[in-house]
Length: 426
Image (tube, rainbow, N blue to C red; front, side, top):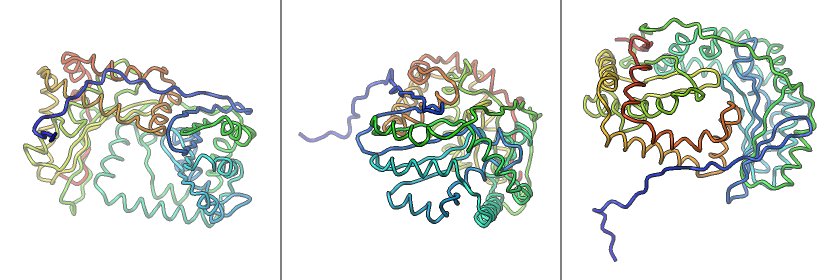
């Protein structure tokens, strides 16, 4: 029987998704261990997550260098020996850094976990911060920063966040060459001692996990001494941005990067899911209104998108695109026009159904592996969200109405409440 490709295959609307629950253990030293034991391949991802990002540093850049320097040498091994130890067993390591958290991530075959864990414990407890490697990392970071500052997109995004939250706010800070050059080894070491070596962290283990694996984690990471306290400081956004337009002039550039948006909220807010759908319609996917208007109809850009950026303590909404300089104002006007349509006209049922089905399918498709499930569970565990938050994700998406979207657009997407940053020129 031949397949008739002119007939679309049947599809089913996704109504619910059940996220596998992690099992939570407490190591001997009080460190929580969350285990997501699923997957068909004998592979494990181990994460040690520290509440020690920009939010907690006394000197700008200290958290970044504290985590990035861990594999550059310990009291017992050089950076080359550390690298070779991981390479010999085919393990991949990554040091992660965000405004809220820093972390150590390791991928390896399940049978090599007993060999990986002592190496990780050594990085946490015995990092040496050798002078030569520190200066090399400092020079590389400064060179990368100089390259980034030649890009309009980087300038627009960093200036946007600085204006939004305030340049001294952890979410508004960005790397600065002067700060990088003057950051002292003592400041980096102090951050390491307080928040990594002596700080309490969270362990997330995903993949094919056995009881023996849990025991060996406890025998290594569960034996270190931790203080169990973190100095948390409250930072309020200090930016005054409503209705402001900021232009970073770059005469040599033929394009401009545009960023528009405002401070919003994080996942704890009651309107979070309704705003997710509103954002998706406006600029959240390839078939969004901004894409259809500004890319497909007007041909002003190769791509434009909008995002709800959710951080631990705050959140913000941002629209971003790159256009030729002469189209900058026209693009801004078209963005405002699409927002105005959301505020004054109800979204049609066909468009709303398409967006809801797309979001449901995209969410379900993001849970194919143990590591993807772990990424979702980490959000719940670290941000203090209800355990069934993502189980109700699709319910909340389907429950959003056209009236809800118009209300969200009028409540949160007023252009007069937004900041506009242009890097390049008009």
